[in-house]
Amino acid sequence: MTSEERVAQVLGDWRARQEKGEFVDPQALLQEHPDLVEDLRRNLAMHEVLAAGRAGATPAVSRVGEYR
Image (cartoon, rainbow, N blue to C red; front, side, top):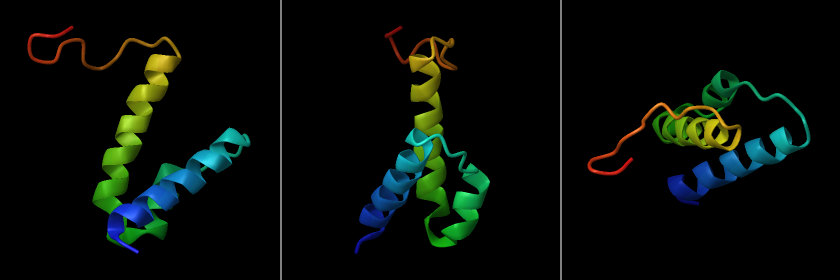
């Protein structure tokens, strides 16, 4: 299994647990998979931004290049 496949599997499991209402500490997830830390951090950060957008929160970035 490639590292990308492993990251996808770990994040899929994490999301499934969250959807069941279980709190999964992101730091614990990183500690469980030290070889995937950078990829997991990047993906968890993207998930946080997307979740904030769905919740109606103001995004951290309001402009990207010429786009708002």
